[in-house]
Length: 488
Image 1 (tube, rainbow, N blue to C red):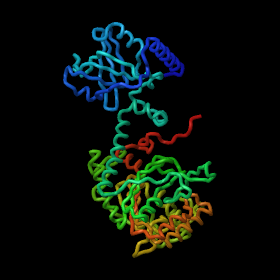
Image 2 (cartoon, rainbow, N blue to C red):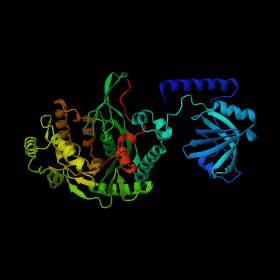
Image 3 (cartoon, helix red, strand yellow):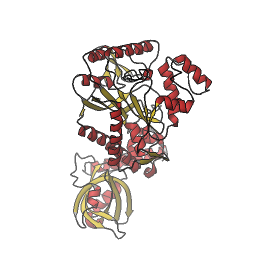
Image 4 (tube, rainbow, N blue to C red):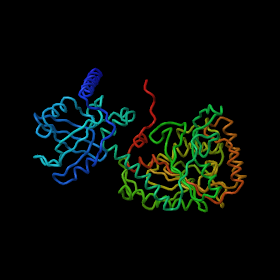
C-alpha cells in the first residue's frame, strides 16, 4: 500500500473512531467475558450458545448478510451477521464502522452454513479495540524479512507458522525444565549486571551505575556465580539466562541470547554426554520429533552420537597435528604450510586463540552430523579441569551439529591455585589488548579456596537448538525481538 493510501486509510479509521464515540459506544472497553476460544467455540454442538472474541481477519458484505473470520491464538472461526438477528440499525453500524484488524466480541449460536463451514450466527456484537492502522498488504503472506523482524507483531498476524515456531520454542524450554527438575536440580537466578564479568571468552557490554558511580558489565555467562553456589552446598543448580556478548551478528549470533547452564556436583563430563542424549530424547518427544530430523534440507541423525577427539578431527580436516604444533609459533608455521585461508595469524595473541580460529573457521563449518567433540587443549578454556592422564588436555566436550556449537560442557576446575594462575594469564592477555580474555575475579578464587567438590558444568544454546528443531535458517527467526540496526 502506497504511503498516501496508508495516510488516507488512517484518517478514514480515525473518522470511524470518532463516529463510534459519538454513538455512545466505547471503542476500547476494559474487558470482555470470553467464555470460549475460537477453536473451542468451533467444537461446540450445533445450536450451542457461545461467547467469544478475536481479531477480524476478513469481511465480506453480501447485501443483508456479512461473513467475517475472527482469529485468536487458538485459530480461526467464521461469524455471520445479518439484519434478521441484529436489526437494521446494528447491522448498518457494523458495516459502516468495522474494519479488518479490529477486535470483536460476539455472542451467538453455532451453526453450519450451506457451504458446510461451522460458524457463529451472531446475536450481539461488541467492539473491543479499534485498529487505526491496516494490516500490511498481502498480510496472509508477509515475506519482507526487515518488516518481519522489526515489527514481529505483524509477522505473527500474517504468518501462522511463525506462531508455531515460538510455541515450539516454549515447548523446548518447558521440556528442559521438566527434565532437570525430575533430576532434582533447582532453578536459580544470577545477576546480569556484574562488576567483574567472566565465564566465557567474549567481549562484554559496558555500562555505568550512577548511584554508586561505578562501571558495570552485562553478563557474558552465569558460570562463575553458579559455581559459587556449588561451593555453597547447592549440588544441582541450573539457570535459563540471558547472556550479552559484544560480538559479530550472523545467522548463529545475536548480541543478546538465551542459554541453559547447569552444574552437577560429583559428576564429570562423560555423565553430561549421557544427560545430553537423555535430554534430547525428552525434547524430541515433546515436539513429536523422531531421532532423524531435517534441517535446511539435510537429514541429521541423533541416534548414537559419535565421540571424536578434538586433535583427531583437526588432523583429519587440516593435516595439522596439534600435539606437535603445540605452541603459537609452531601452529602458525603449520597453518602457513597448509595454506589455510581465513586465519589471521598476525592478529593472534596466543596459542589458544589461534587454535580457536583454526577450529571455528576451517573445521567446524564442515561438521554436519551431530558429534561430541572431546578433549580440547588446555589453552582453549581457562575454567576447565585438566585431564589426569594428559595435563595438556581438558576434560570437555562440545555437541556440534550443522556447523554450529549446541552444547559446551566440561569438568570444572576446582583447584584454586591452578585456576588463579590461569585467570592471571587471562588478565595479562586482557591488558595486552585481547578483548575476549577474562579479568581476574578475586572473589571467585576466594570461593574456590573454601573448597568445591568435583563438578561438571554444562551450557546449551536455547536459540540455536530452537533453530535446529524448528528448521529455521537464522537465529533471528527464533528470537521474538532480534537485534536490528536502528532505522534512520
